[in-house]
Length: 398
Image 1 (cartoon, rainbow, N blue to C red):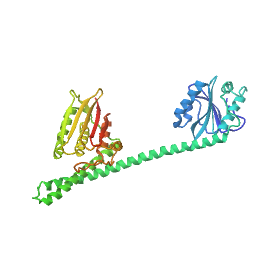
Image 2 (image 1 turned 135 degrees about the vertical axis):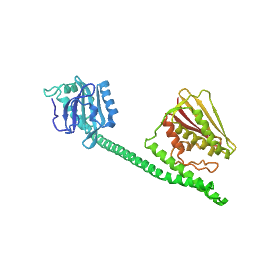
Image 3 (image 1 turned 180 degrees about the horizontal axis):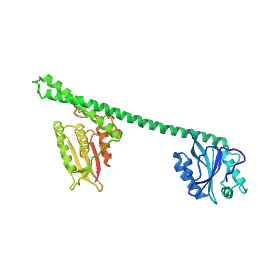
């Protein structure tokens, strides 16, 4: 039977079973029909209060009674911070929720007061049997009401932040789509420029003067850089849109590594840099996307050459651990200041360390490498000391 206090109060009272499911709505002074019999008590609350709800019920079961817990309840289009008390009864768990602390006390006392009457079911009788410790009458309820109001504003702000985050994610997706479209549309004309500049440089259309060769070399060098930048932009926009597709197949990592080192020996030779390769015995084949891992290797090895001084050595070493294979690329270059290491894998970050031969960089290579390695379930990291050099390492699961 539903019980009504002596006067209308902005509160409600429930009888739940020991598992927390509502058995009966004893009183609903909020007039919102917030919860119905058979529903779990937690369904009454805002999703952000799930953990606190579980702690609330567990504390009642453990201690027998609790008083004045604050949890958030959606009421209409608003989320309100309500005060809750509860205690174990003969028939389950008796719970009271109210808009203010004074209302909570009033409703609870009225239920306790009529606890032996014929109009009250066993939940109220249980409440009379083991009531929680109530505050002194002269406690400043206005202070608690103000705290409740401030908490409600905080909840509203949190919900607004959630909405803003959703909007930011939507805008980020639009940004990635825009970059992808622009990069795709720019790549074709850049490929044409690169192709025709190569034809001119090879003197297919006629012999060129030294000055003309110099101009064509500038055109080709910059078109190569722009094409790589556009390709990287297209690639990272796909990755950030969650479209990193891996075609895994069993791959001999050492063969892949040797192939990539040979590709970088030309650039290294121009700076009189030696590339040394070493590995432990019995490096097992790995299930990886070979072209993407080759892209990572090319980035790390070419970077080591770019940022190393002439007549130094770049070392590439492969080792196996219990659950993974680790590849490390070490240089004898400038090293990276400690305060800049955390920015290495962020797209377009500008660092104080510059290439030693004027080589250009898109600022996207390491960001792409990190996403590729993490997509394989691996790790990528760096150790560096200014004036000594850097070692970039990545692992792949066996």
